[in-house]
Length: 146
Image (cartoon, rainbow, N blue to C red; front, side, top):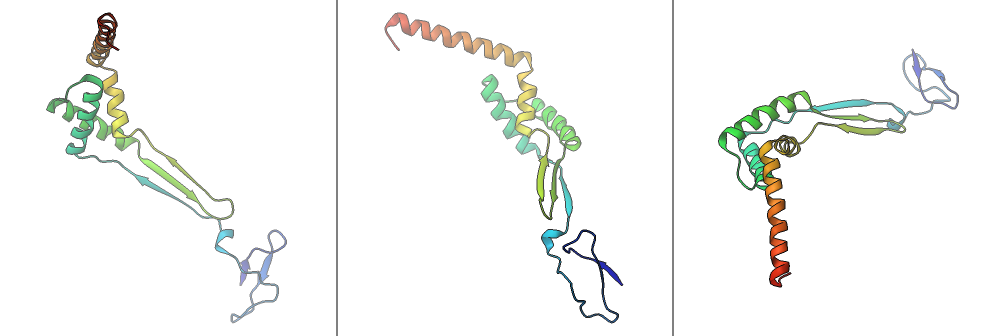
């Protein structure tokens, strides 16, 4: 029986005696010397309650109102499709010089935020609040406020 083990020389071959036992010159192999790798894939599958919470927070932040039930349903379906095609992948390589890398798509919050930011309503709300804040500031300046 021939076994490969780590030794002082590259590609050292060790003959194990018949019937077991040990051979002289045997160098034990530690687990850090053995290269291993694995990849875990996780799919995000939010429920409708989580989507409603996320959508309402995004809408309040960007448009000053809660999302409608129809909007929540639409974003839920869109994000489910997106998440199915963008799983989180965690790759771990062990052994000497091992590493871990993670890749994933957008979170549900980031995904919905990007969609809402692209709507005309969000642009109108942003413009209106910007002008309103500027007008408030000007009025405070003329009335002696800060």
